[in-house]
Amino acid sequence: MEEIVKEVVEIIRSKYQSLYMDYEYHEDSDVYEIWYDSEEMRYDKEFNMFVGELIDKYFYSRDIYNIFIDYSYTKSKNIDLYKLNSDQNNYRYTVESSALISIPRAA
Image (cartoon, rainbow, N blue to C red; front, side, top):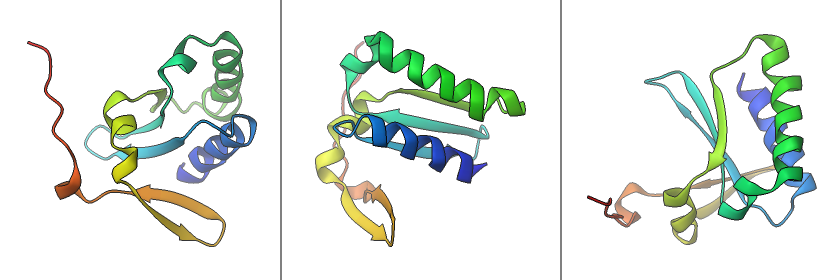
């Protein structure tokens, strides 16, 4: 499953090169979250059609439903704190939890 997620992320990255995108697996809920850093893209019709087609092709057609793709405010604001950790052709960002800034929630 993770290989499919990586493939979809790379397809989106290749088409939208200025968009930062990454993924995370949530073991407690058995869900893969693919997130990106541009709130404006949430409302971009072309982007949503493209991503929707990928979701259908790579996940739903294989009866995989434990996936979601969305803008992440919190992760986007912390991108500057991430360190690039590369291994050959795969680039992943990691963050030290002690470096995260606490963002207060609205009451």
